[in-house]
Length: 163
Length: 102
Image (spheres, rainbow over the protein chains, first blue to last red):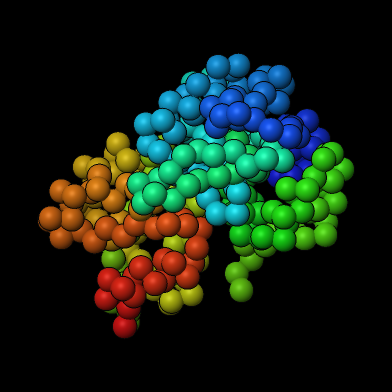
């Protein structure tokens, strides 16, 4: 069995746990920090993501406090493929979408996409995580990388094997 | 035969790298469940999708992007906006509400 994305996140040190962030822009920046430190993305990669969300609205925020900040595939300043995980204790507001629904997040899964097939595999695994509310709840309580792994073990992501 | 067999689908998001991929995977599962065999299933960024949409029968996007496809809609492309792009039930409902299910 290949490593799961959460195992990769832990092994690569692509995680961050914070209590509070004032703005979503700051949160996006912090969520790329572990990726930047390890050379997966340039330090200013976050700016592209911020610009994109500013332009298109908070469509990267999904249900159950999940945000997936990203730019495009093969984006400038992205050198390797990974996902940066960040858990914020207090919810971070991305503002309201066009229907007036406020978009809030506590879990950040920030994409760095350089290698298309690895990225595709990551996305498939992320769907399994994002559609597993028990796992998301456990991740919101995580304070250490060990907690991430324990959460995954307790509530395995829904795999893509059909039916 | 389903009404949706051999239709050309496109899924679109702002960048073509994140949510559109997820939408594509969700759509694949939804269509499989419905027993539909689409002619094609393309995912791309809005910049490409805006002009390409007329070449497709059905376009899925996050609901805030529906307006982008007004031109294609006028020319007959069915554009369906989703609140939760990973929800198979929502996708199925959108297809049903558009009268596309048997």
